[in-house]
Image (cartoon, rainbow, N blue to C red):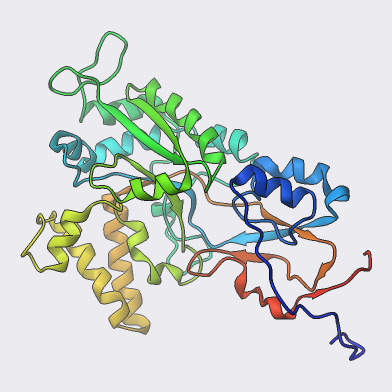
Length: 354
């Protein structure tokens, strides 16, 4: 009903438009075939092309706030079957070194068009669990400091300056990029490859489809993982504390914890304690829950298991002119399920121009 108690043109069905890849998704949005653009194509890089086609596509921009902690994060498989590789990834100095090697300011300007700020994998600023130390540690771009940390782990180099394994082979990291999920990660990784190779870590990028990437992520021998850091707003971190731990394929430690030591490999004391706290978080409430979560976050901060890039900012959706009563800003997220809680049943459709 409108303010005069007239029945508005209600929405009696929803239709999902299937597309084979992100380029087709984008084309369908630009021509006005869909009413709300998908999050994976509503990127900073696509903002200009959306703007250029507004009249043809008959849509407008609606701002969207993200519930995510970070535009991306790197996860280090500390249970990797290559024992030397696993030992490198378990050494916090290696992770700190790679983090200091990233020029986040340049990356934000070039890939995310100035939207966001350097940030680690940590609850968002307005979350009650926000910690400046957790969010900002090791985000300073300092190649010399990065090299000092990396020298503590991989000190030997070849004639080209690349770091070596004990047998004389180069230590190579492989990053699989899901181009269908986040197309701007391809450009992001091209820059990061340059940053890491400048401090002697050879980096290989594998650009994969969504289906191939999903099967790869959980494989025991998958190398450094790249994924989105979700569930960082408000009290959402309570629902997904695993998002702050190590790689998705650190199965041996988790198996040891889940089977009470009957299977898997015993994790270090700090990891063991973090897994115990994850079990406790949903079993308590109020101040006690915050206390348990606080201890968990302190251990995560000290362990620094994942590297983040930037706090998401400047999100948007292209929304058709005919679709009205869409709240602004929309809220995006994962456990806060995308824009769905905006309550689509309160939207309405009109043929009038505004």
